[in-house]
Image (cartoon, rainbow over all chains, first blue to last red; front, side, top):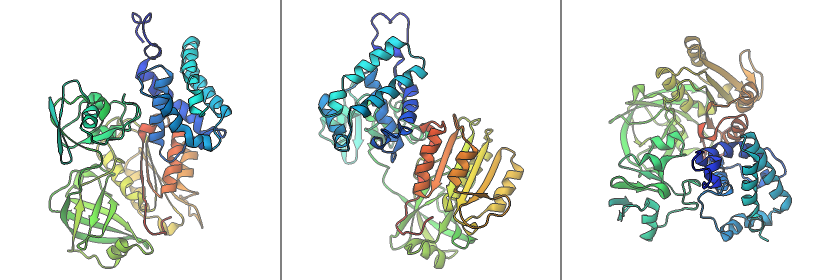
Length: 128
Length: 326
């Protein structure tokens, strides 16, 4: 993150851009697949593809460039909704998101901003 | 303006357009999603030239080396020939020059190719016999003797190709070899990195190639090999690996069997489980996994949870048509 841009920079820039995403993704995915409450929604069969998806998620949560629409979110998660995906699972993911960013020493105000962006897709993810 | 050759199609990429934009604008179907270099859905391979470095950001080093790139962030700097999958399979004639028994179910064959193939230790080729029957086998040697390639062929119940190799293929016979393929291979970058290699059955073949290559290249990190089988009968090269260990202080070898008696010096248990309990902290390690698909998949996750980065985990699962692989 660069000093001179801090007044106008996006959250993605302030948080550290792609390097920050890379640092966060693996920490986050380790937490997710170790969590019995939600790991069934994160298939283990292709770890590289899963990690790429989490990378897209973090880019979005940091307000980075992304092309996801509400419909994309709904379609991507529809089969998990039929498997029982609900608010408790979304809460667990939010928990891991927060814990990951804390572990990386991201300032609390930036964590709140990222959490708010992730929270904004809750209804689309849960198909509500 | 650069030309893109994609299969039979040749399209023009306007300055400022990405490869993905250009292909989609020409009504070509390319999987894609985030369009910002994150999701890797639009992974493609360049067949003629090295793609722009910026289009390879975030890819595994082995993918970068094989000229893979992300179409959505690729602004061509020259004409490119590109494909979605691996390139078309070309075959080279070869002759069998030796055949020896490794254990009751595995034999080693050595072939001499008419033209030496350019491969990385750990890759595999397709071997094709005269009637067209083709199977994939890992190259078991390093690049030092590139004109002679060795393979470990395990006899599978009902396995047409492996039965034929065991029973009929003789020294002097011809066989065809495809271009080397696969991404589970050794690159001599970061030589101080510790290596963990886990293989079951003939999964030792690519790992042996990788180990020899690493040692020949002067790899300075620790190199730990765990080779497993159900019973003692399924192991091989025990003496050779012990010998290698004696000559290279940074190489460590642990044979493992999951059933039956274990003689001294052999660990009891599945190779992946023995390895993961011995090496609980794998942060910054490079990991190679070859053999039974279930072992490979479990070990991949376990290595990741033990701290290895997914970019440093290289795996080759041996999928077989018949049922008897353990």
